[in-house]
Length: 142
Image (cartoon, rainbow, N blue to C red; front, side, top):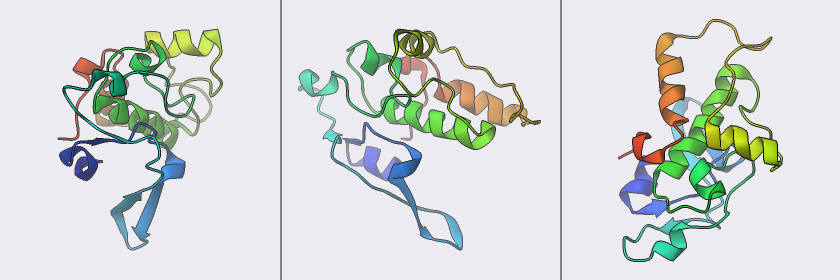
């Protein structure tokens, strides 16, 4: 993601199905696929940074609310992926029901349940930062 963002590319559909390992011996050698929804971030073209794009359950509040967004939409989607890695499930319902949209837009998710064992404070802090409702407060990869 850092490489894409450094080139000015916003993927807009980050999810586990679009991340592949290049080398089994090197867990950090990932390749991002499915660039169909990707855009070149352009400060002047605000229309391309609006609208419903991505996969339900991975879309951040700004996309669901048809607000302007930037690179942080990818960080949010990777936060959903990180949640799955930590907790073995999605933090938000995968369908785009009214309840799901409300939970996403309010940033309401639970970090407890049968699949949640002890997790480090650092993991919880990172998850909280990645799933921050206001993307202007979400960290970037850059």
